[in-house]
Image (cartoon, rainbow, N blue to C red; front, side, top):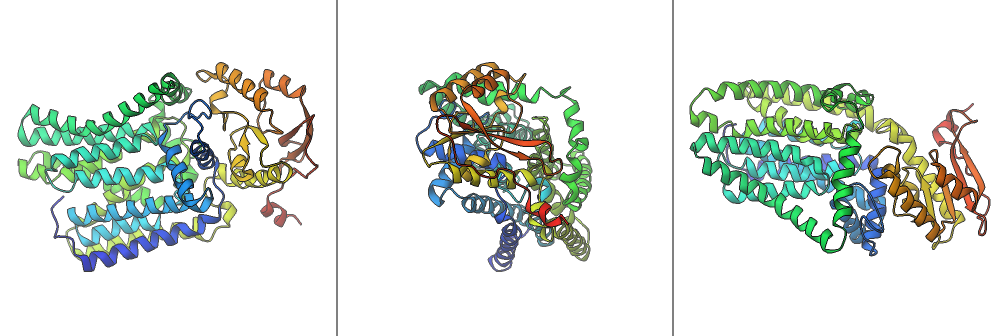
Length: 528
């Protein structure tokens, strides 16, 4: 990457204003869509933490604490409502777009910067990668891009840049630990350039130390905090031991890196973003080849490729991060977005003639917008996003509203399933520490002990309503049979003989009758 002209407040200020406006405009249509289960779960746990509950004791989930603190703070400042979380995610997307532009304008050309940032802006709500939501990856991208901008500010970033870049990646890791992969890739690239430039192992070690200081301090502080509050083993079990076992359920470690391109969800993940995936892939190969060529040139030429090698490192690191959990939910792929648009913007800026740069940039951005228009902007609101969540999140809101209508504000409820949206939209406390039941599934590390904790929680709080969305384990079924009565069922829309939900009410404090058999409005509309 060659150093470009300085930032121009007139030209670049106008460009950033327009780009940020596009980000907001693209994300606004999705604000009316209910939160999907992960997002709702973060909101539920965040609210409970703000009320004084203890993470991993009073409320449990197999995630590091950062995402719950983030949602708790957002809900506390802006209100526990969907618009607050959507606004926070929109702000994170705006920051990411601005950083993409700044990196490219400083290290490339105006046409390339507009192309890369414009590509991000028009796909800021890409439904295939859950860009329209407010899952963790949306926030992680802003932190990763902040780190990237610090590392590429100069050919030789000052020590403070390395320190703060590592610190931002450390914060991102408290949202999701897989960020260790891009941290390792970016750190490795910086260490290699440091050694190549100085031929000094001491300087390379200093680079490693600076990049490592932030994550080390953050995780030592977290470990110390949870250990000091008698939750050290619970913290380690939830964040590390459980997730290792969760990911290892899939057959073969190496197979997950192939499954990135061929899992069952891959088609719907890439449908709305094909221009980004194709252009990003082509650009990745092009800049990779140019980087290899530069290796054989002078040290000055190699130094000028620092930014290029970091784009390659970012894409490789984020690819590994997407694959590590081995589950391949659509929002995982969102981590690839900054690297993809950076590679396209840089490749466009490297075209020989300015006219070609503008032609290629406009063509790629226009195609990306066309795909978004067809797969997002003009689609019915209920058909936007991951097909797995599209129905379920609307269903959870409808069921939550029914729960609220038949219970008192002080009643607790319990959902045997992963539909945390029911708690969120009912505004009722979960009777257990387990707001979703992933950690209680058969075969996962520690599931036996967690099932015992669940039964103890239910015995202590005695939820007024229990909603069964998945088959129960025997001990839970026996517990419910002695204390609860059938209150209703929701039958599957496609098969009216198959219940999707069984609702139970406490025998000694039954709820009023209500119609639990909810049908999706769009299916009702299509019924003759």
